[in-house]
Structures are given as structure tokens and as C-alpha cells.
Length: 165
Image (cartoon, rainbow, N blue to C red; front, side, top):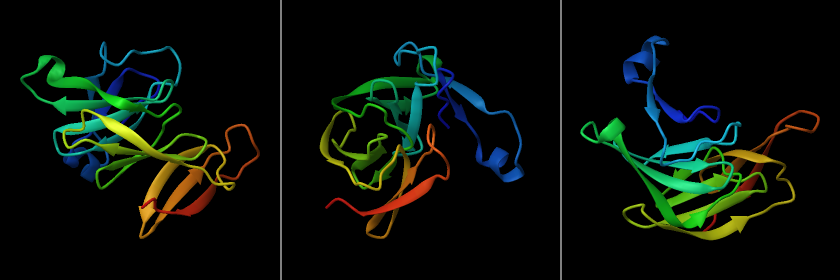
């Protein structure tokens, strides 16, 4: 789980989730992912496998690959993903070999290399119904996008747009 306020990811075990309690383990993100003293840090995380994660840093849109390895210092290796940034990126999903990243203005779609060491923004999907896009899910041939109401009157809304081919 990402923590936009602290320079860590929180790891919850399957047992902790099943019983609904427990103390998660903190996985430090620094110094590889620069921390800033605001809630604009890592906001999106997806798992490529049980030992490989991808994260986006909200403030600058930098993407990182995190390889979990108990033998590595701090239990992980963090590598910047070159070639693509998604400023204001948030709760992203993995759609095949693509990251679909809400970026407050809509969705940015990033095609990943096989090793996830690089990526290319293949499209930035914009729609008049988007308003502070903050999360996305894929349902069939549609992306469902959560529109936040940070500085506007509630409610949060959902937009539905076709999946990018």
C-alpha cells in the first residue's frame, strides 16, 4: 500500500488481511525515491509479480520499479523507469503490459518494456467528463474513472470511457 505522506510502502500479509488486523511492515523508499514534505509522494502502486512492484510519484510523475529481495539492502532494489513520466499520477492499474495512470486531467497510458525498466506514454486520454481523475478500473472494454471532488462540491463521480486499443 502506498503512503503519500511517508517515504515507505506498507506490506500487509495475507494473514493480516484475513483477520483484519496486524502491524504492517514498512518498506523504505529512500533515498532512491526523493521524499518531499507534503502528501505529493508515491500514490500509485501495482504488482507485476510477487516480487516486482511499480510505483508513481505524484509530484513529478516519475515511475519506479521496485524489486523485492530479502538479500538486498533494505530488502529491495529501486530502479527508475526511463522514458515516461506521468505528473499528478495516482491510483494506477496494470492492463496487460500497459500502466493506466489517472493524472487528474484524465488517463495516461504507458507501454512498458518486457523488463519494466523503461516505458513510453502512448496516449493521454482526455474526456469532458473527467474532473480530477484519481483512480481507474477496467471493466470489460471500458475504463471506469473516479473523479475526485477535492476543491469542488461533492459528490465524487464515475466516468466511463472506452479502453485504448
